Length: 179
Image 1 (cartoon, rainbow, N blue to C red):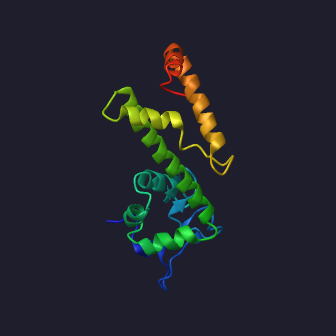
Image 2: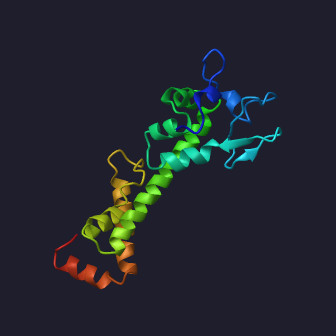
């Protein structure tokens, strides 16, 4: 069952409402308001609550970047979410929420990778290599990413030295096992 029935999001002619659903965009008439663009729920002047759509979006879309489950759970309809998220007045907010949910998803992934390294699991070497190479860092400095790879190599070397592995690193270089 959806959080809001489609009768709350459509007008009498069946058109999906957009701006009038949000407290900050509805201006003088708050009759149809059910959401706020703030980061927390608020109480409207008429005493009704307005749900912070941003929090629902980030909570639900962190693990579902398609936004389909969010659309179904909140609106009961993909069409309604498509119209609301595509509205020129609301789109900048939705883009911000999408960035935040992407960052949150990546943070969870990094926690899993770091946990794998810390626990010396089956994939710990691959996870450690991934963290050292920093392949997620924007490689926009050069087209082929040479500068980014050089920086990643330097930071990896620094990490080895800080981990008191510099003597082992020097020995391996002297033996020709690494460059």
